[in-house]
Image 1 (cartoon, rainbow, N blue to C red):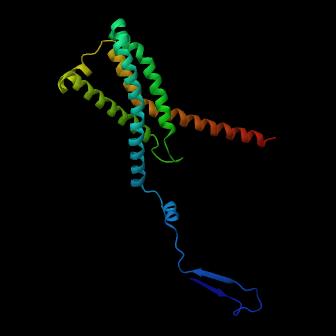
Image 2 (cartoon, one colour; image 1 turned 180 degrees about the horizontal axis):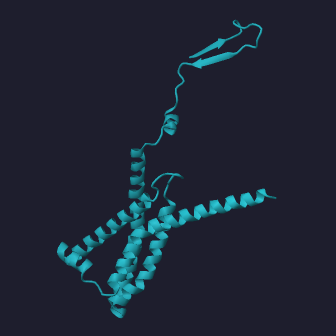
Image 3 (cartoon, one colour; image 1 turned 30 degrees about the vertical axis):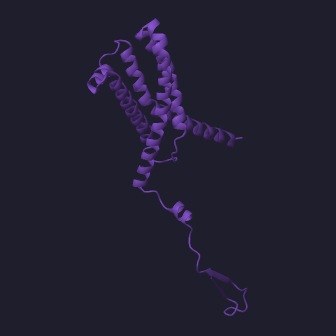
Length: 206
């Protein structure tokens, strides 16, 4: 329902002003949602949801590639090269997969410019993905060894003295890589903005 008021009868010598009111006009839910400020709890929930989803994405890519490489390493390379050299030969490929997977993961990250604690999301992604990887590998080793204690012993203790530490460094890089990629991209963005700003200032002198 519309109500209109006119000033013609109040000020006959002036141009009339018409004001209309809509009784049923209310802000749409989408507009209210957009205008609603984001609280600290909402920001935390968004960060945790993103970290959980992207950590599964990151873990799935690396784990599937590792399983694919392992299916070729165990039956074909280990009988001829031995466990040590077969695992060492696999490590550069896994590091490349980790690097590319972290880039794909961080490219899917949605963060607002100027938001506080932006680094926490990539840190959480790497930490959660590390937990998923260690948990799945421990469970797989326990099943193959016939028990949890045997699986833990084989996973942490019964490793090659050279290939074992190299594998540990690869897993550590797997956990740190999302934060490292995010930091590199963030610094590159800052450098680009500063360079563009300096170019604009230089052009202003001419």
